[in-house]
Amino acid sequence: MKKLRVGLMFLAAAVMVFAACGAKKEAVQEPDRETLFQVSLLQGLTFGDYHGSVTAAELKQKGDIGLGTFDALDGEMIVLDGVVYKAKSDGVVEIVKDEETIPFSNVTFFDTDEKLNIEKVTDIESLKQFLDQKVEEKAPNQFCVVRIDGTFREMNVRSEYKQTEPYQPLAKVLETDQTFFDYTDIEGTVVGLYCPPYMNMLNATGWHLHFISKDRTQGGHVLGLNVDRAELALDYTDGFLMELPENEMFRQFDLTVDQSEDIGKVEMGQEQTDK
Ligand SMILES: [Zn+2]
Image 1 (spheres, rainbow, N blue to C red):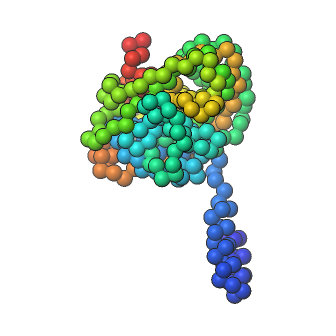
Image 2 (tube, rainbow, N blue to C red; image 1 turned 90 degrees about the vertical axis):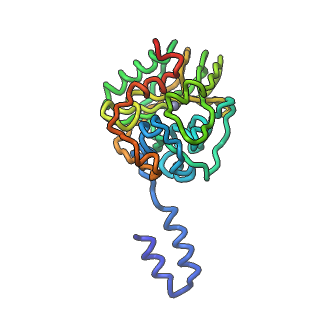
């Protein structure tokens, strides 16, 4: 409002000045740093709705850290330090163009609330238990984003092949179309999101982790890890904003169906579901 008033004051002087104020007006819009933004429901993605609905440019206005996937399920998304990366099915990471669209994602702006170190974490379950304990102590009913920086003795990630229509449910796609990459002694960052239990109809509850290497050339959805020492930064977030897609496929889903079993499979990779 302030900017508009300034614009009007100068209106008599020159139309050019007004135009400049208009441009400035957009720039002063402060992003809400304490809101977790979500594109669609994970349950929509699990049903097979891979139609991108939000562009990468729009997503970057909602956050500088997060995870997700791309139109046609074309790889795993890692958002870090304001850059949207795609870990493709061939293991190659690329920076995503602004016009690419996204069917599912979570992002927020990262502000460190708590710093921690971890030592000798030999598997992903131990890491999740450690993180669970931290959020239970502090804010189990809020969202939490973690970034974990370190050199990982082992890092096991997956991506998936780009799909063509008609789209199949995610668990079915991953039976055949996952690709796995196992790295050793790799330096990089894990980006993780914690969703509280009440989110079970909208997302995966607990922790969902993606990885990107320090040189930004390798990454994916984390299935396993082993790390001697790493630095953790946690950001608790108490706002939530969800944008639903408008396509016909999404409109017809029966989202009352409990998909938690499929989501568990998808999260842990088909290979490991029998554990
Ligand atoms: Zn993932």
